[in-house]
Image (tube, rainbow, N blue to C red):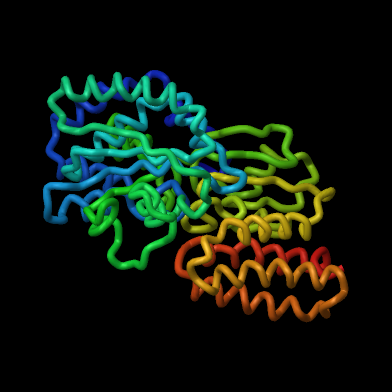
Length: 387
């Protein structure tokens, strides 16, 4: 990233890219060479966790068995994130093609898009375009077909193993790991699951080459990322920006001149106060994000923000494990009790220890991530919580 200047990019929504031409280019290579290109590009999962995409494909390919799956996680349920909806709406063929490339690379014959229930209004358009895409892929003698499975609006089903459970017609609850999806995923078969954005970037890497992709971003955060910008900003919307940007540059572009905090990564992310804008990097070497950037100015109560987040987590916890099920409730009741004067301000330290325990003991990312907004808001805006 040159001189730490905010750089807008246009890869995801680039209309000059013919996805099927890229698929033809890929089919001229061996699956192993395709995977090596993705590994070399440094592409990491854009859902927030940041696992190297090429390694995920490699591990899935190396598993024995004729039945493997490619899953596109389109269960975009993180509060503040709405960029996958735009990608699904504007460039669905790029997603389909990215899945076909993944299928070719790992040796899968079936792919599924798990679509967030609230996005079912996109189904008529997606099914129509998917029917046309499947026909064209078959004409290329690529034995791969894509179908869509719709969720029912459960936040927990964004977690990959809970997503598999939902796809199999069961209650959406996380599984124990290991085994990981590359070994035992959908229908207990080796599965490569990537989010919408990751699959489109894989397509663009196959078009441009890994070296071109690595010209963007930093050593630890290669490429660009699509961000959903909302809150107290004069420029809300969806923007593709180079990874590795300092938060101060983001605020300079999207703030309203009175930005006191940015919630990076949605409700489950970190709240960065004004005093840390200069030393915070948006990327895997700093604060990674699935895409949500919520901007708050001085008119906002951070107590209300935290209260809203905890209400959300309490509602969306699947209830399977005690640390998350009980912890979310107690954190919410705890800050309410402090605000009402029923508990001493020092009780906030007990709640912080509870949040830290949840991070260690919860079964999946939902309970584990509650500590992020809770601790970052309490540490940086304590006076708004206790008074």
